[in-house]
Length: 218
Image 1: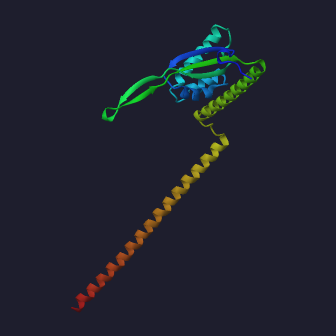
Image 2: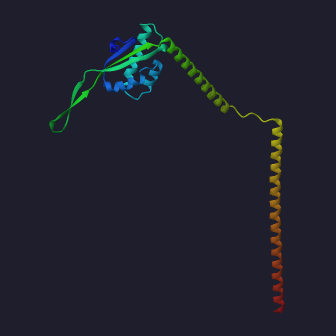
């Protein structure tokens, strides 16, 4: 059974001819957006790292504009029903090589076609329910982020009167303990200096007695 021909597929279409890219490269990107909603397809093309994604995005925008202005359709209800790339003419160029030879350079071109269609009623309800759930989830995530940022920016709540009194009592006790430790250390140091002075006095008196004895015997 033969399917629907390419030029007979239903929907609103847009076409770009003689795009300076090979059809193989364009098809790799078109496979990513086929069957996606137009919003998702635009996001995929915007974040694609392929150069051919830019002309494909322009063709998709043109198809959406045709659907809105010519057919009176809403862009939120459209999806990429079909997209394909046909081979265009190849430009022949030459590159000089060694010993007077030349190598052919083939610059490929392609024709890109994008067709957008409206969802059927059942699928449209599912898509809207999914988008609403996604919006609720995004709003809840945003609310949590805002709450966390506000909590981080707000200063800490002041403590109660009882907690403040307990903290003051603890601070006073720490100060008194530190003062007592300083006094004890000072007294111990003074006692040690006094013992050293007495020992030195005893040693000096013993030396004087010995010197006196030596003088008397002499």
